Length: 104
Image 1 (tube, rainbow, N blue to C red):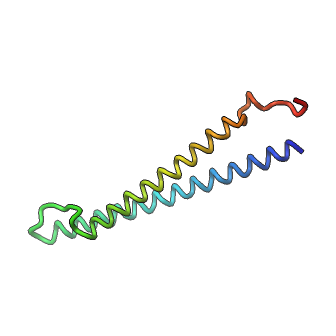
Image 2: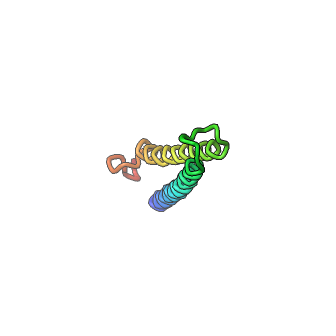
Image 3: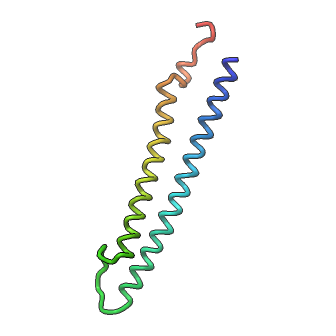
């Protein structure tokens, strides 16, 4: 019975880690997409003529920068959750050294 509980816990843990990894990949894709938009917008501004620099005073540029910053923060949160889930498992004795015997 104890073995089944451990197996179930392990499967749940793997599912949670997998889900976090998928979320991180989705955020990476969103970041790439927003960076491409920012590059396109920057090119449009610079090629419009007369403007030699781009800054956050342009509302479109600023909004993209804010979105990108937000996505990077969200990605970092997910990475911390992923790291913490690994660390928590080790602290709870789920390492090979602490497997224990059912009779203990």
